[in-house]
Image (cartoon, rainbow, N blue to C red; front, side, top):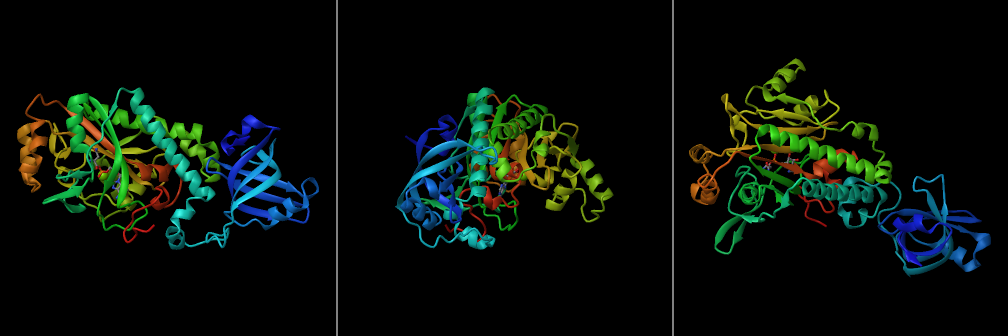
Length: 430
Ligand code: 4AD
Ligand code: MG
């Protein structure tokens, strides 16, 4: 019977056939160990010379890395492997012989691996990262569906710039100027007025000239938006959502976390509520820590965020940033208008900001004033302003960066390993 590696636990002591590739191999005169992969998982195939026809053993010994084949054998329990099973091989049918596979088991540099990303994805580690990414996506849909949110898809081609005009990918829309979306938020606000609680999940684009381990040019964002939710309500959704995805990964990706060598005791602590500090407190804290360069009114850089995050074993909300360093749409604090009702969620262990969110301005006149202050063309935001003319309500939302979240949960160092085909500064291939 043809099955996948993910299904072997249901076929113990039965003869099965796997369509698979050879990930790696070692052999002696009497036995060959084949590391087989089929996309659903990895299993060791054992070929015992004394038990198979001579040609089969010779064939096993000559198999090349990444050759594709059908392997027939008996599923056996194996206490020593983290997977728990192995395959006692009886027959091999090679489908395609792979010659000189470039990614050999020896160590390779990151640029070489990135040039071969289309093949590198097959490696055990990359496979594990992609499975965790998939679980985060699955858990995201589950969380928002179970909590009464509707998924809404904002456009990718837009005429507006929610997060500032310096990082836009400009393109032509026939005769008009257009941009690739840097955030679906403004459209999600319109959707929240129609559907109450909404979320989006889609690609976003930022022409950021940053070459750091946290920046992608194209990344995926989850953007919930909620009518009648104020600042506090917004933080509650965020901490519950983030805890839910971490706990889902712990439950459903045990093997993958093991493959990645992730310390799960760190992740087990990620439960709501999360600690909070204000921007003012963060500045004071940084001064105590010897960061003399930072002044009230400056934005935080990666070293500042890391220093703050190190004081906590959960993600931490930094709230109430200065109005001057945040986008035009954020609601001012009712008690002082030099700060806004916003929060960034900073992941532990130096992974940086994974969420940016805020309460949104719902007053027409104030929003109009802010657009002007930010030099944004009112005509392009006419529809957005109109949301404040017909039954405006307090509302809030946030955006979670999928790749930074995958990076943190898997413990991989660089965000380039958290997306199948990363778009980085100077990299559009493969
Ligand atoms: O903080 P940002 O820019 O917020 C927004 O775009 C809001 N409009 C979201 C909203 O309220 N609906 O981006 C949100 C998150 C960041 O916290 C970060 O996790 C991720 O998106 N992000 C990036 N991830 C990878 N590469 C980049 N260049 C990123 N820029 C932002
Ligand atoms: Mg941000």
